[in-house]
Length: 154
Image 1 (cartoon, one colour):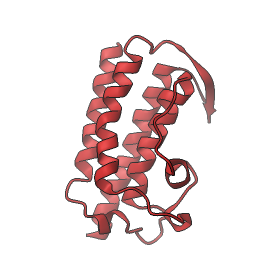
Image 2 (cartoon, one colour; image 1 turned 180 degrees about the horizontal axis):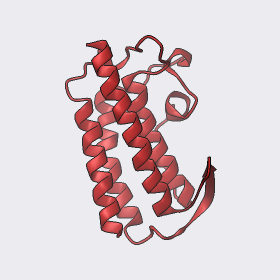
Image 3 (spheres, helix red, strand yellow; image 1 turned 120 degrees about the horizontal axis):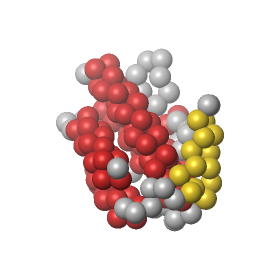
Image 4 (cartoon, rainbow, N blue to C red; image 1 turned 135 degrees about the vertical axis):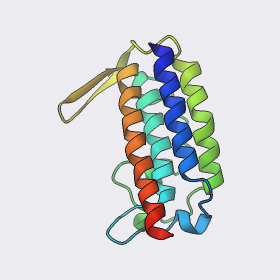
């Protein structure tokens, strides 16, 4: 079962990366009317949440470059940024390497109890695998948002 989860993670990540192909730096920062975030924020947010859900909840050290929590954590938005966020190319490079790190770190640990169980609505995540499964759902939601934003800004 673990191989299936990692393959799904690779599939979801491929769709996310493909969704931002041909997006310019300028387009990545456009916030469509009625929304509070941009394509750049969504990409950084996907990366940040995976680091928190995969690594931090398992008691591992997440790889969050300086500023990522302030730019991309849940509840943040570009209107509040006081420093320049990473380039789109940097965010994509981080996304590309993240799935391999997750697979390598958790290859035989998906049933490991989380160091920090979390309840979101009616769901409680108690294992690494449960967090990864939810992270893929979360990533898919944000990938669809990116696709919608692209239609709105082009």
